[in-house]
Image 1 (spheres, helix red, strand yellow):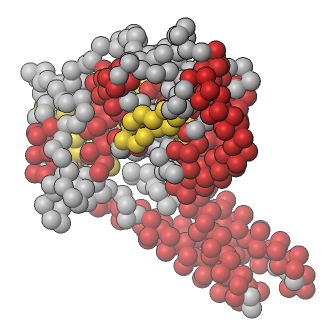
Image 2 (cartoon, rainbow, N blue to C red):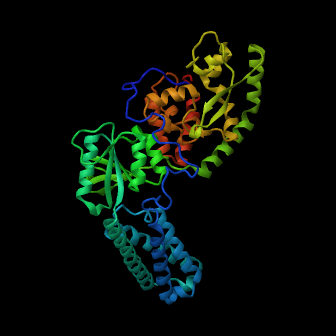
Image 3 (spheres, rainbow, N blue to C red):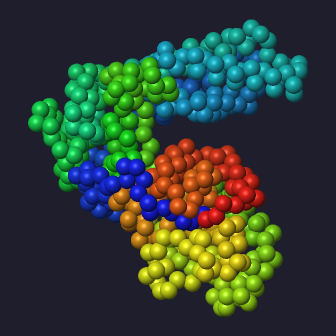
Length: 478
């Protein structure tokens, strides 16, 4: 599970972007910013949800208080308010499009109001049959709340669009110079889209540039501060600029991935800005939080108690056949580049510390005893990593951790490798259940690991654990 391939995959040569492969920005200050002057660091679009939530709450309260059948049940009014707000939050109605339009969200708003009123009517009919809502009351309540909510939302959206048109957000466009300049020119021709490009970040100028071309991290930081940049348009695969995009996100910039070639109607689930298909870009991955940690502790604790006799048996056999030192400890790199000590059963004894840190894989070496070969072939030597999970060094599911030497090497060679450390490393992962173990492509592993992080969910973790358990009955080696 831990071996990686050093054989270059297609296109595996390091690419020169004009930026350092590890970091393109000066080190961040204690506050986590990039040197913004006081009072100028702002994040786009973060203040949209309070007025929208307030509008929905007022609409629910007004509709509930104006109907006599609802007035006599104050808890019903509260339930009406909470139900609509929670459903709208769940449906991302408090995260509107860059240029919000009332007609676009009208069906979703009305549908959630109807669902909430129907649920309330069903509860009252079940528990207070004598005071069940009539069809007339139900229709009037839905209509009144929908009218108030839509009117309020329309006012909020109109005010926001007007503010964006008057004060568009300064933006940088990141990508190949020719494409980035073309996209920037299109945005400049449509100032009402709320975004005003002020510079292009590219490897080198083209000679026919409309906007300044920034080729170094220092130039980007200077433009960021001088122009109060609050948005970033990315017109190339985000993995190519992973360190820079993470730094810009931490600086308070809203990131947008822009498709410069495909028509907007070819991409579902996104937005349209200046005629381009766009979608919000999250470089940090989805936050796992308490649920993932709870799963780690519960499963690793239960497994350790269940397999403790097996672990003791393995330790005894290794001690008798290979001598003292049955536990192998090695420094690995975890989340956010933090080192930790990984635990395994010792199946091989390196010649020295240098070999342990820089030699790739010992799988299949004939000098190992048959028992050690069995442990490695079945990945049972990894069971001690449940202790790493229990104490928080690792997770059950996540990108496999690697030694510092190879992390540095791969980060410089494979775009996106460093981005794997956005989430806690794991015993198994999406790459492993797709057969990417042993001497397989590092480029493919980067793609699977980053896809796992970008689309993380608790259900995905459970599925990977089940697939890993199934794979243990047909081991292929580590």
